[in-house]
Length: 347
Image (cartoon, rainbow, N blue to C red):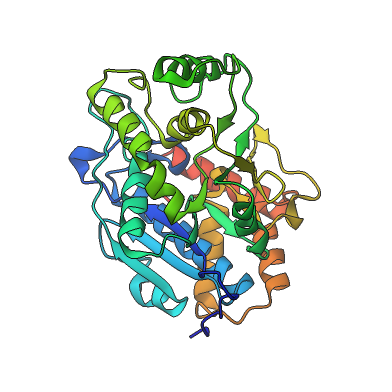
Protein backbone atom coordinates (compact mmCIF):
# COMPACT_ATOMS: atom_id res chain seq x y z
CA UNK A 1 0.00 0.00 0.00
CA UNK A 2 1.26 3.47 -0.82
CA UNK A 3 2.17 5.57 2.17
CA UNK A 4 0.11 8.60 3.11
CA UNK A 5 1.19 12.02 1.99
CA UNK A 6 2.08 14.55 4.69
CA UNK A 7 0.17 17.74 4.01
CA UNK A 8 2.01 21.03 3.95
CA UNK A 9 1.58 23.14 7.12
CA UNK A 10 -1.86 24.77 7.11
CA UNK A 11 -3.01 22.87 4.04
CA UNK A 12 -5.41 19.93 3.96
CA UNK A 13 -4.62 17.03 1.64
CA UNK A 14 -6.40 17.58 -1.69
CA UNK A 15 -8.80 15.03 -3.16
CA UNK A 16 -8.90 13.72 -6.72
CA UNK A 17 -12.27 12.08 -7.34
CA UNK A 18 -14.44 10.63 -10.05
CA UNK A 19 -18.07 9.57 -10.01
CA UNK A 20 -19.85 6.76 -11.81
CA UNK A 21 -23.56 5.95 -11.76
CA UNK A 22 -24.69 2.44 -12.67
CA UNK A 23 -28.12 2.72 -14.27
CA UNK A 24 -30.79 0.07 -14.22
CA UNK A 25 -32.06 -1.04 -17.66
CA UNK A 26 -35.17 1.15 -17.38
CA UNK A 27 -33.04 4.18 -16.42
CA UNK A 28 -30.52 3.99 -19.23
CA UNK A 29 -29.79 6.66 -21.81
CA UNK A 30 -27.35 6.72 -24.70
CA UNK A 31 -23.67 7.25 -23.95
CA UNK A 32 -22.32 7.65 -27.49
CA UNK A 33 -18.57 7.36 -26.84
CA UNK A 34 -19.11 4.18 -24.82
CA UNK A 35 -21.01 2.55 -27.66
CA UNK A 36 -24.41 1.93 -26.15
CA UNK A 37 -26.94 2.49 -23.39
CA UNK A 38 -25.90 3.27 -19.82
CA UNK A 39 -28.25 0.56 -18.54
CA UNK A 40 -26.26 -2.18 -20.32
CA UNK A 41 -23.67 -4.12 -18.26
CA UNK A 42 -21.40 -4.14 -21.32
CA UNK A 43 -21.34 -0.34 -21.41
CA UNK A 44 -20.92 -0.11 -17.65
CA UNK A 45 -17.86 -2.38 -17.89
CA UNK A 46 -16.31 0.16 -20.28
CA UNK A 47 -16.47 2.80 -17.56
CA UNK A 48 -15.20 0.48 -14.82
CA UNK A 49 -12.08 -0.23 -16.88
CA UNK A 50 -11.62 3.49 -17.44
CA UNK A 51 -11.81 4.46 -13.81
CA UNK A 52 -9.39 1.72 -12.76
CA UNK A 53 -6.92 3.10 -15.31
CA UNK A 54 -7.57 6.65 -14.02
CA UNK A 55 -6.81 5.75 -10.43
CA UNK A 56 -3.85 3.54 -11.35
CA UNK A 57 -2.30 6.38 -13.35
CA UNK A 58 -2.96 8.87 -10.54
CA UNK A 59 -1.41 6.61 -7.92
CA UNK A 60 1.67 5.79 -10.01
CA UNK A 61 2.40 9.41 -10.88
CA UNK A 62 1.30 10.94 -7.54
CA UNK A 63 2.11 8.40 -4.79
CA UNK A 64 0.67 10.45 -1.93
CA UNK A 65 -2.48 11.67 -3.64
CA UNK A 66 -5.81 11.12 -1.90
CA UNK A 67 -8.15 9.29 -4.31
CA UNK A 68 -11.92 8.88 -3.95
CA UNK A 69 -14.45 6.99 -6.06
CA UNK A 70 -18.13 7.85 -5.81
CA UNK A 71 -20.66 5.37 -7.17
CA UNK A 72 -24.15 4.14 -6.40
CA UNK A 73 -23.06 0.48 -6.30
CA UNK A 74 -20.11 -1.54 -5.09
CA UNK A 75 -17.35 -2.24 -7.63
CA UNK A 76 -18.23 -5.42 -9.59
CA UNK A 77 -16.25 -8.14 -11.33
CA UNK A 78 -15.08 -7.14 -14.83
CA UNK A 79 -13.22 -9.50 -17.18
CA UNK A 80 -13.16 -12.02 -14.33
CA UNK A 81 -11.43 -9.55 -11.99
CA UNK A 82 -12.92 -8.31 -8.72
CA UNK A 83 -12.43 -4.56 -8.93
CA UNK A 84 -12.99 -3.78 -5.25
CA UNK A 85 -9.63 -5.22 -4.14
CA UNK A 86 -7.91 -3.67 -7.18
CA UNK A 87 -9.13 -0.19 -6.27
CA UNK A 88 -8.32 -0.74 -2.59
CA UNK A 89 -4.80 -1.75 -3.64
CA UNK A 90 -4.41 1.65 -5.28
CA UNK A 91 -5.56 3.30 -2.05
CA UNK A 92 -8.89 4.46 -3.47
CA UNK A 93 -11.59 5.40 -0.96
CA UNK A 94 -14.95 4.18 -2.19
CA UNK A 95 -18.10 6.04 -1.17
CA UNK A 96 -21.46 4.62 -2.10
CA UNK A 97 -23.70 7.61 -2.79
CA UNK A 98 -27.05 7.49 -4.66
CA UNK A 99 -27.90 9.78 -7.54
CA UNK A 100 -30.52 12.39 -6.67
CA UNK A 101 -30.34 14.74 -9.67
CA UNK A 102 -31.22 12.49 -12.58
CA UNK A 103 -32.23 14.22 -15.78
CA UNK A 104 -36.00 14.03 -16.10
CA UNK A 105 -37.46 11.65 -18.68
CA UNK A 106 -38.01 13.34 -21.99
CA UNK A 107 -35.22 15.88 -21.50
CA UNK A 108 -32.86 14.07 -23.85
CA UNK A 109 -31.84 10.67 -25.12
CA UNK A 110 -28.24 10.90 -23.90
CA UNK A 111 -26.24 11.58 -20.72
CA UNK A 112 -29.16 11.12 -18.33
CA UNK A 113 -27.09 10.64 -15.17
CA UNK A 114 -24.29 13.20 -15.56
CA UNK A 115 -25.58 15.60 -12.90
CA UNK A 116 -24.04 13.33 -10.25
CA UNK A 117 -21.50 16.02 -9.40
CA UNK A 118 -24.03 17.60 -7.01
CA UNK A 119 -24.31 14.42 -4.93
CA UNK A 120 -20.53 14.04 -4.90
CA UNK A 121 -20.04 17.61 -3.65
CA UNK A 122 -22.84 17.23 -1.11
CA UNK A 123 -21.15 14.18 0.37
CA UNK A 124 -17.76 15.89 0.49
CA UNK A 125 -19.31 18.93 2.18
CA UNK A 126 -20.68 16.66 4.89
CA UNK A 127 -17.40 14.86 5.53
CA UNK A 128 -14.44 17.12 4.73
CA UNK A 129 -12.91 20.25 6.21
CA UNK A 130 -13.85 23.52 4.48
CA UNK A 131 -10.26 24.18 3.37
CA UNK A 132 -10.00 20.85 1.54
CA UNK A 133 -9.20 21.30 -2.17
CA UNK A 134 -10.88 18.82 -4.50
CA UNK A 135 -10.95 18.07 -8.20
CA UNK A 136 -13.69 15.98 -9.77
CA UNK A 137 -12.68 14.56 -13.16
CA UNK A 138 -14.29 12.29 -15.71
CA UNK A 139 -13.43 8.60 -15.53
CA UNK A 140 -11.90 8.68 -19.02
CA UNK A 141 -9.05 10.90 -17.83
CA UNK A 142 -5.47 9.73 -17.30
CA UNK A 143 -3.05 11.35 -14.89
CA UNK A 144 0.46 11.34 -16.32
CA UNK A 145 2.21 13.96 -14.20
CA UNK A 146 2.18 15.80 -10.85
CA UNK A 147 -1.15 17.21 -9.71
CA UNK A 148 0.24 19.99 -7.51
CA UNK A 149 -0.15 22.61 -10.28
CA UNK A 150 -3.84 21.76 -10.61
CA UNK A 151 -4.62 22.27 -6.94
CA UNK A 152 -2.40 25.36 -6.85
CA UNK A 153 -4.94 27.06 -9.13
CA UNK A 154 -7.28 27.21 -6.14
CA UNK A 155 -4.84 29.41 -4.24
CA UNK A 156 -5.85 32.34 -6.45
CA UNK A 157 -9.30 31.32 -7.74
CA UNK A 158 -12.54 30.01 -6.28
CA UNK A 159 -12.95 27.38 -8.98
CA UNK A 160 -10.97 25.80 -11.79
CA UNK A 161 -12.38 24.34 -15.00
CA UNK A 162 -11.57 23.41 -18.56
CA UNK A 163 -12.60 25.75 -21.38
CA UNK A 164 -13.81 23.99 -24.52
CA UNK A 165 -13.16 25.77 -27.81
CA UNK A 166 -16.78 25.77 -28.93
CA UNK A 167 -17.85 28.12 -31.69
CA UNK A 168 -20.73 30.58 -31.25
CA UNK A 169 -23.90 28.81 -32.35
CA UNK A 170 -22.39 25.33 -31.96
CA UNK A 171 -24.67 22.74 -30.37
CA UNK A 172 -23.48 21.72 -26.90
CA UNK A 173 -25.77 18.85 -25.94
CA UNK A 174 -28.86 20.89 -26.70
CA UNK A 175 -27.68 24.41 -25.84
CA UNK A 176 -25.33 26.96 -27.39
CA UNK A 177 -23.08 29.55 -25.83
CA UNK A 178 -25.71 32.13 -26.78
CA UNK A 179 -28.22 30.08 -24.78
CA UNK A 180 -25.82 30.22 -21.82
CA UNK A 181 -25.87 34.03 -22.11
CA UNK A 182 -29.67 34.04 -22.15
CA UNK A 183 -29.92 31.83 -19.06
CA UNK A 184 -27.34 33.95 -17.26
CA UNK A 185 -29.21 37.18 -18.08
CA UNK A 186 -32.58 35.69 -17.09
CA UNK A 187 -31.05 34.43 -13.88
CA UNK A 188 -30.09 37.90 -12.76
CA UNK A 189 -26.57 37.87 -14.08
CA UNK A 190 -26.96 41.24 -15.80
CA UNK A 191 -24.82 41.92 -18.83
CA UNK A 192 -22.31 39.34 -19.95
CA UNK A 193 -20.62 38.20 -23.12
CA UNK A 194 -23.07 37.28 -25.87
CA UNK A 195 -21.24 33.93 -26.03
CA UNK A 196 -19.79 33.15 -22.58
CA UNK A 197 -17.14 30.51 -22.07
CA UNK A 198 -18.07 26.87 -22.45
CA UNK A 199 -16.68 24.94 -19.48
CA UNK A 200 -16.47 21.20 -20.08
CA UNK A 201 -17.68 18.55 -17.68
CA UNK A 202 -14.29 16.84 -17.39
CA UNK A 203 -13.08 19.05 -14.53
CA UNK A 204 -14.67 20.74 -11.53
CA UNK A 205 -12.18 21.93 -8.93
CA UNK A 206 -12.84 24.00 -5.82
CA UNK A 207 -12.48 24.00 -2.06
CA UNK A 208 -15.21 22.51 0.08
CA UNK A 209 -15.87 25.79 1.86
CA UNK A 210 -16.38 27.55 -1.46
CA UNK A 211 -18.91 24.92 -2.50
CA UNK A 212 -20.74 25.32 0.83
CA UNK A 213 -20.96 29.05 0.19
CA UNK A 214 -22.27 28.71 -3.37
CA UNK A 215 -24.16 25.43 -3.54
CA UNK A 216 -27.54 27.16 -3.33
CA UNK A 217 -27.09 28.41 -6.89
CA UNK A 218 -26.13 24.98 -8.23
CA UNK A 219 -29.14 23.47 -6.43
CA UNK A 220 -31.44 26.11 -7.91
CA UNK A 221 -30.18 25.48 -11.46
CA UNK A 222 -30.68 21.73 -11.06
CA UNK A 223 -34.18 22.23 -9.69
CA UNK A 224 -35.10 24.45 -12.64
CA UNK A 225 -33.71 21.87 -15.05
CA UNK A 226 -35.74 19.09 -13.42
CA UNK A 227 -38.94 21.15 -13.31
CA UNK A 228 -38.45 22.67 -16.79
CA UNK A 229 -39.28 26.12 -15.42
CA UNK A 230 -37.24 29.19 -14.65
CA UNK A 231 -34.07 30.61 -16.18
CA UNK A 232 -32.20 27.31 -16.15
CA UNK A 233 -34.91 25.13 -17.69
CA UNK A 234 -32.80 24.30 -20.74
CA UNK A 235 -29.96 22.82 -18.69
CA UNK A 236 -29.29 19.13 -19.26
CA UNK A 237 -25.66 18.38 -18.38
CA UNK A 238 -23.00 19.33 -15.89
CA UNK A 239 -21.15 21.43 -18.47
CA UNK A 240 -24.30 23.52 -18.86
CA UNK A 241 -24.40 24.05 -15.10
CA UNK A 242 -20.73 25.03 -14.83
CA UNK A 243 -20.92 27.39 -17.82
CA UNK A 244 -23.92 29.19 -16.37
CA UNK A 245 -23.21 29.06 -12.63
CA UNK A 246 -19.72 30.51 -12.67
CA UNK A 247 -20.67 33.73 -14.55
CA UNK A 248 -23.73 34.11 -12.31
CA UNK A 249 -21.54 33.83 -9.22
CA UNK A 250 -19.08 36.36 -10.61
CA UNK A 251 -16.12 34.80 -8.80
CA UNK A 252 -12.59 34.05 -10.06
CA UNK A 253 -12.46 30.87 -12.16
CA UNK A 254 -9.04 29.55 -13.19
CA UNK A 255 -8.57 27.91 -16.57
CA UNK A 256 -6.75 24.55 -16.46
CA UNK A 257 -6.16 24.25 -20.21
CA UNK A 258 -2.39 24.38 -19.71
CA UNK A 259 -2.69 21.22 -17.57
CA UNK A 260 -5.55 19.31 -19.19
CA UNK A 261 -6.66 18.73 -22.76
CA UNK A 262 -9.68 17.02 -24.27
CA UNK A 263 -7.80 14.91 -26.80
CA UNK A 264 -9.90 13.36 -29.56
CA UNK A 265 -8.26 10.37 -31.21
CA UNK A 266 -10.98 9.01 -33.48
CA UNK A 267 -10.18 8.46 -37.18
CA UNK A 268 -12.46 11.29 -38.28
CA UNK A 269 -11.53 13.74 -35.52
CA UNK A 270 -8.02 13.66 -34.12
CA UNK A 271 -6.78 16.61 -32.08
CA UNK A 272 -3.70 14.92 -30.58
CA UNK A 273 -0.58 17.00 -31.16
CA UNK A 274 3.09 16.76 -30.22
CA UNK A 275 3.43 18.21 -26.74
CA UNK A 276 0.15 16.78 -25.47
CA UNK A 277 2.11 13.95 -23.88
CA UNK A 278 3.72 16.46 -21.49
CA UNK A 279 0.38 17.50 -19.97
CA UNK A 280 -0.38 15.98 -16.54
CA UNK A 281 -4.03 15.26 -17.43
CA UNK A 282 -5.31 13.67 -20.65
CA UNK A 283 -9.05 13.48 -21.31
CA UNK A 284 -9.56 10.80 -23.95
CA UNK A 285 -13.27 10.41 -24.81
CA UNK A 286 -12.68 8.31 -27.94
CA UNK A 287 -10.43 5.83 -26.12
CA UNK A 288 -13.01 4.46 -23.69
CA UNK A 289 -13.42 1.21 -25.64
CA UNK A 290 -9.91 1.08 -27.05
CA UNK A 291 -6.91 2.60 -25.28
CA UNK A 292 -8.45 2.34 -21.82
CA UNK A 293 -9.36 -1.29 -22.41
CA UNK A 294 -5.81 -2.02 -23.53
CA UNK A 295 -4.35 -0.16 -20.55
CA UNK A 296 -6.64 -2.03 -18.16
CA UNK A 297 -5.42 -5.29 -19.67
CA UNK A 298 -1.78 -4.22 -19.37
CA UNK A 299 -2.25 -3.23 -15.74
CA UNK A 300 -3.93 -6.58 -15.10
CA UNK A 301 -1.01 -8.50 -16.60
CA UNK A 302 1.29 -6.51 -14.33
CA UNK A 303 -0.70 -7.43 -11.24
CA UNK A 304 -2.15 -3.91 -10.94
CA UNK A 305 1.11 -2.71 -9.45
CA UNK A 306 1.53 0.84 -8.18
CA UNK A 307 5.32 0.60 -8.45
CA UNK A 308 5.58 1.34 -12.17
CA UNK A 309 7.91 4.17 -13.09
CA UNK A 310 5.86 7.28 -13.98
CA UNK A 311 7.77 7.69 -17.23
CA UNK A 312 6.99 4.09 -18.16
CA UNK A 313 3.30 4.66 -17.40
CA UNK A 314 3.25 7.78 -19.56
CA UNK A 315 4.95 5.98 -22.43
CA UNK A 316 2.60 2.99 -22.18
CA UNK A 317 -0.50 5.20 -22.02
CA UNK A 318 0.70 7.26 -24.96
CA UNK A 319 1.29 4.20 -27.11
CA UNK A 320 -2.04 2.56 -26.25
CA UNK A 321 -4.10 5.76 -26.48
CA UNK A 322 -2.45 7.43 -29.47
CA UNK A 323 -0.89 10.43 -27.71
CA UNK A 324 0.65 12.35 -29.36
CA UNK A 325 0.15 10.14 -32.44
CA UNK A 326 -1.21 6.70 -33.30
CA UNK A 327 1.24 3.98 -34.17
CA UNK A 328 0.37 1.63 -37.07
CA UNK A 329 -0.37 -1.29 -34.73
CA UNK A 330 -2.97 0.73 -32.84
CA UNK A 331 -4.61 1.91 -36.04
CA UNK A 332 -5.02 -1.68 -37.22
CA UNK A 333 -6.12 -2.99 -33.83
CA UNK A 334 -8.72 -0.28 -33.30
CA UNK A 335 -9.98 -0.65 -36.86
CA UNK A 336 -10.59 -4.35 -36.40
CA UNK A 337 -12.49 -3.71 -33.20
CA UNK A 338 -14.63 -1.05 -34.86
CA UNK A 339 -15.52 -3.44 -37.68
CA UNK A 340 -16.30 -6.20 -35.19
CA UNK A 341 -18.64 -3.89 -33.26
CA UNK A 342 -20.47 -2.88 -36.44
CA UNK A 343 -21.21 -6.50 -37.34
CA UNK A 344 -22.42 -7.25 -33.83
CA UNK A 345 -19.31 -8.86 -32.37
CA UNK A 346 -18.88 -7.09 -29.06
CA UNK A 347 -15.28 -6.57 -27.93
